[in-house]
Image (tube, rainbow, N blue to C red):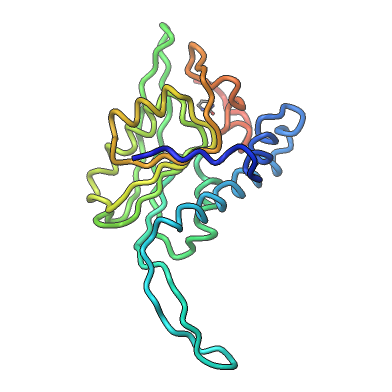
Length: 216
Ligand code: URA
């Protein structure tokens, strides 16, 4: 499946620029709003891939033929950073069912980490359009671990992965491990730090959205 990059010369590039900018990203409400707005734009772009049925609706002046999405949509996000992106998608796909997965990196002293999944709540995914949202696609291991867990809940018709900044490494990794998924991203960055943060990226998306956490 191809990767769709919505960046250069669209309004998304302004929203992504504000998310990256150290002098703007500290405005937490604006940061969350920009993430939600990008979610809405992705929802619109993804809606172009749906199947539609023709219906008639009665207007005050007659009957109009309209075309309506004919899909069962499930939006999934990785807690906590995925929540505002999910909210943006949900504000357009208002009837969607929702899944939530908590995933976090457990770092080891040697700099490596593993993904811990602790909480999953998910509807039946059989034949649905599954949209999995997380703002940062760094190594791809959180997306991959989440997809593997969601696999227990049925086989979706199609799977869309929605992210705001992806690393080239993460895109290649997911294309190799989960080739069915279509990846939508607002930007692609080339570098990862030793701790697998995206460079230039934007920093820690979860902390910028919701505030810093204590490290254990
Ligand atoms: N998660 C983040 O919040 N930022 C990164 O750069 C990578 C993963």
